[in-house]
Image (cartoon, rainbow, N blue to C red; front, side):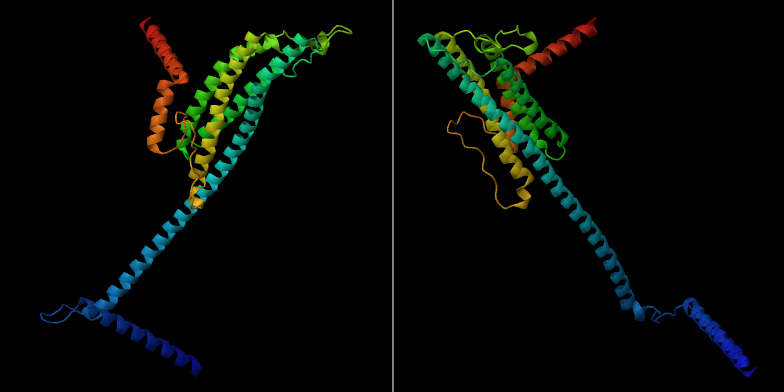
Length: 316
């Protein structure tokens, strides 16, 4: 019982002391400051300012660290995306280059094989027909263009990340147009002078499996050689533009990871087009491709025809 009484008394004393302290604090805050008397808070002003400044510094540091962390994450994401774009692009470039090499070799071999065949016939030697086929040449031509179309898909898919790639799409469109213009007369010429396979279902029992080609004259061979050269020139342009694309893609997509740059192509003939991605060069190249090439002029004619058709339909 004595212990309980002492504890109760102690609690009572603490409560009374607390009440007195609160009362004094209220009197201190509410007590008017007399003239010439130093305010109660002036003695602690430096300490208060230091505390507030410390809190503000902590808030600023936390905000700065957060912004810095977001920036690092953003840059890491960009670097990862650049590497992914580069890997996807180079894979497509390698595939296209492989097809280009085969088609270019074939277009150079065809005139030689036709000349050999003609010489064998003229010499009375049992001739060996060329192994090339116009149908195969056509299929590989269109397969090549399909590979280039895959590059266009990559350019368009990542336009927001690498807008400068658009100049390569324009350049390759020009080269594709030129190769198609050279391909069509060459293909019809090859139909006349290359063997044609007879499908098994169309063969007569014991009949030949191949339709023997016509024997090309010197004039025919000269014309075919000329058509093949023109076709090869267009393919060479594509090869050069892919080289430029490979160099510029390394500089744009991998440049931030390394201290050096891949130099641009330096053709011996200064009239050859080299594609670089500085702003001045892009503007100059766009103007050239759109205004001075067969593709650009054809595009302009198409646009004018469309506008003319629209005007006519609106007038009616």
